Length: 232
Image (cartoon, rainbow, N blue to C red; front, side, top):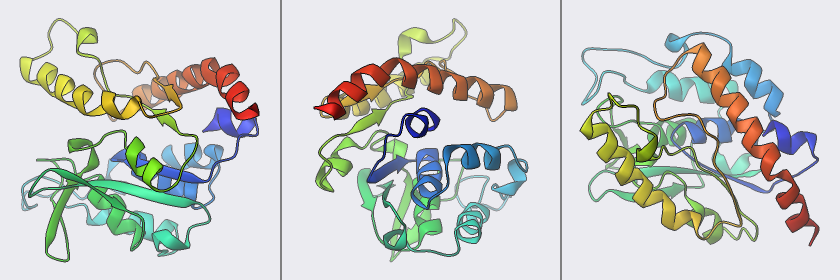
């Protein structure tokens, strides 16, 4: 985001799954990359996570995340944002992706970010939803269906080959399963950016700094190709 803004690259549509929907919501609402970066450094896990032993099928309700988005962005609907925005969630009953492009912004981000067995599922009109990563981590098709003619896909899905020696088999299998969902989507993107953030992630300051730096490096490396393509 920072590299795009510095290079004067504008955009019409943001599509986000999981935490990508949270960042995408603020970006689509008009926040700059620097403002989002500063916002991410404020508060602590309790700012957006409401931990509870009584959460349904998880240990975080998710209401605090919903309220955080709505409070910060003025209780806007998705369709009222300055830039088009789509939040990707997974319909639990059949594990199919669902693209939210209208409705309550906070609810949509909460549904897209409801990590299975961590966050409580989100019920909307009698249908339960969970994290968009469970069906479509990089939803290129959502952008294409919305009319995008040039799509930049950002893929942070780990490669099983990069797993540390002590990685459990279940973690490796999860990475392989996610990769199988991502790769077909990437084939339809016009440009793919794959920051090297490592196999394991963590909600720590050190990891956030590392991830930001990796994102900037990958974006700058792709910039010549991107500018040449846009120039055409």
